[in-house]
Amino acid sequence: MSVRILLADDHVGTRVAIRRVLSSNPEWVVCGEVDNGIDAVEKFATLKPDLVILDLSMPKMNGIEAAKLIHAAAPELPLLLFSVNGSDAPILDEIRAAGFRGAVAKTTPWLLPEAVALLLQGKTFLDGNSARIAGPLAEAEPIVEVEAVAAAAAAAAAAPDEPQVAKQAAAEADEPGEPPVA
Image (tube, rainbow, N blue to C red; front, side):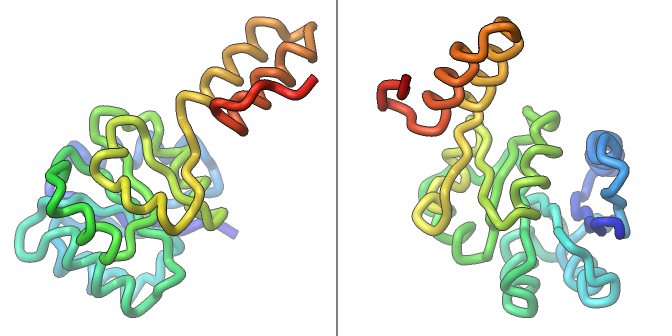
């Protein structure tokens, strides 16, 4: 069965780009697209998506207000912030309270598939550029360190015939700051 994703962003080009990036997984389908927060809440109620991706700055109702309403109706539903706005400290508590489980900066759209996959597993996701946006999410659930995962993958790719190198890189990714276990 397909995972149904609702997109809410006021820019058509951004929604097209998100859809294109998400199409890398044939099990994911964009079930609806809206350009404002009010429509996001209405479409959520009628479409019953498995995940919602919201921009922060939208007309009629912003992403935080829409997320609050969606989260109140479906607290287990993963909400992903996809925005360039919201790095001001006063907004951080609002983002967490709204129910967002992850954030991806619009400058790093290639991270969307990983973020969606992790949110669907009940985890959080913060890319390096979004850590300022949704940092307080770390208090509730574990954060996937993108840099550590990327380093482990790069090490494994660079030395595919050397399993010890890959194990060491994976250990470093799992426990940053701890020496790898031999």
